[in-house]
Image (cartoon, rainbow, N blue to C red):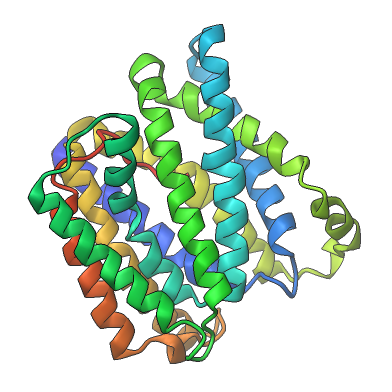
Length: 307
């Protein structure tokens, strides 16, 4: 099998893992873990795994002048990003979270214009308008359907924007150091920020770990190992053999896969039934966002990864 085909399969698997996580992770909160405690498990678990690999394969020495940028990456790429995602997912539907995440490349294009001085063409402007229209329409209808929440969707948008800020900030570091070194430090710093979040400690003390069923522990481990650790390694492999523009198109699969997994996991009895949150109206908004992202992403960052 060719390396190019393996790269395509890797990126498809990455977005498949993400799609499943939107449905599985929602089943963990808030009955077994609060969003804050869940984030702590994910951040600390991923940090340990990344350091194990980093120490095994070596790491670059970080220059002092880059420390502040790393701190910003840790805050926006892990702490704020994950706090908003898990709280948003807890309040809103898994379907909405998948659709809103597809809006991320458009935010990257906008931020690149202001901070990296990338030019926005008329075609990209049209894509931004289309994608923004779909996202706004989705938000305006939030709270009107089962499992929807205006507050949850706004937190998911902040999550998407925060990750876009991280991508812009991380680009110079990725060009200067090994991506494995960068992501290891990003998660380390991000975990420290999570530990400094005051509500976490009270919720952690109230968490009864012994009452969590084995099936829920499997879901938690899946998010830590599968959705955080393996997805990053698979993304690095994919980007090694495919262009960033090709790699970025795989984000289109994520909302569709969330919907498919919602039906599949419900039929299998391993997740709550979220299929009632899937409506034709949301599918239309999703397609509008897809069209906008496709048009706007013709020129964007040379780096794609979900933290």
